[in-house]
Image 1 (cartoon, rainbow, N blue to C red):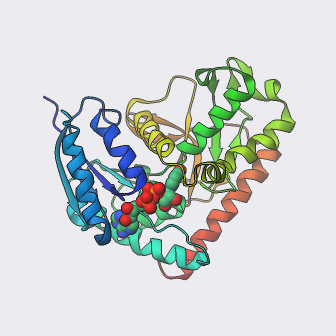
Image 2 (image 1 turned 120 degrees about the vertical axis):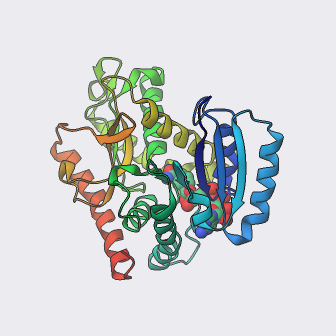
Length: 326
Ligand code: NAI
């Protein structure tokens, strides 16, 4: 029988954790591979996490071989093959960005150090907690011995939102949409790009027109998180869990021929994105490793949008550096 995979999940008692864990129990994340679950929580949420662990027992999943709950990153990450970092300190009213970055550096710095020391040699790290790109940077900077391509920030939710909007607009099923990219930061400055996208075999721009592609489409996708908060009274949870699963399956199994997806990766300088910052790119997975799709033509409109989002990422990195946290 297949040896189990060890999954460590931070923020496991939070909303996304609660949605994701039961989908892991039903095999959506790792197929039929059995899984050991390590739930990492803040001390104040340990009791709630233990409650979720009881419910996981009640799921009577044939795939879950073991569940542990801890507030110690080293215990959670020991031997972990997959680490999903959801737990973060959200921005609260009146909180300065400097404080937000500092608090999150206090979470992701130590967690990065711990995973660099104790995780499995093949570890993959996916960061969801916001600001996701800069939290990924902090995690990776504190785990210098882990290969850079193992770290990703989740931008698959933005990608899925963009695919869904294009499918709605053009009246096709989502399976007809390909070659769409989300560039930059997981924030309002992100650039959902239709320049290379196809609807069936037709260029998306020919189908929807430039005007819609360059204004409404970008605005709707980039503001979708706020729209959900207004409509639902809370941020995206189940769709985020779906995106985590889609990201991970695409990494494990690859993306269909001729297509790609989007993920926040540590830049190697591709597309003029400064080396070392974590930006969303068009990506494919080759033998379980993320690679940036190369050779796409970037026109003046795309250049300006990518540069604007990259400027925000450079700003976040500078702010973290100025605090002495990188
Ligand atoms: P939540 O507040 O329900 O859960 C967060 C959990 O993290 C809480 O249980 C909290 O106790 C825990 N936590 C806090 N500090 C921790 C630490 N040091 N170690 C371990 N756990 C810790 O929030 P929710 O809805 O689950 O969202 C979590 C994060 O995901 C937020 O930062 C949110 O902004 C982000 N997010 C990112 C998305 C993306 O596309 N990248 C989409 C949706 C949410």
